[in-house]
Image (cartoon, rainbow, N blue to C red; front, top):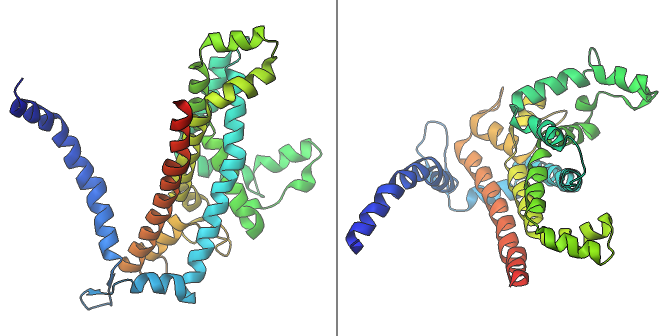
Length: 305
């Protein structure tokens, strides 16, 4: 095959994917970043504003207060997933990988099933379950003599975001579980057999043999959790609306961007400030991913060699 023919074949297979990716990912991203450098007034053309929108977003209390509130809530949303979702996913994967466990395929399917459901369905169902008027959660706690723990979780400022986070954990715990479970299955049996011959029990084999070998997968799960949580929007919107109540206590950067860009109730949409918030979200995610790639992933590659 000549070199020219090779490049024509390569272009034939790659060009459609490159065009689709450019049209639906690269162009919207670049257009959003460009819009964040402009200023728009009603009835007037856009004017170049440099970094003015970013100074306004971070320095003007009208914008900075809701922005930092949403950023703090987003960090808390991410930390809850890291502390609750991923350890539970790791524990479930370790249990499912035990060869003597019966019906593990059934357990695996049941745990992963909520991940395949629509977020709208999940949000609506949990609103019904937790409803103080007709929800079954109150009856469940009363039956366990724990009725004093019940409250209008979604209507209280100090419990709204925590409740939504735990619902999100319940829905998506199947993803870290299945990724870590796959990594555990890939560990050669010879290593586990050698650990058993050396006298290690199940716990010691997991912590001293299996866990070091699946650190790269756990790192991948962590960075996916970070990206997904800082792009989160739909579950909060379904359960608390665009205002992310009560009193913006469940507001995250996705809902703040939505209200700013498209407007809500009496608030008019602001395209340029919405683009500025979206650009900040992109920068936060980019910095987080770069830290993972340059500090953690490189150490893992060095360890593997």
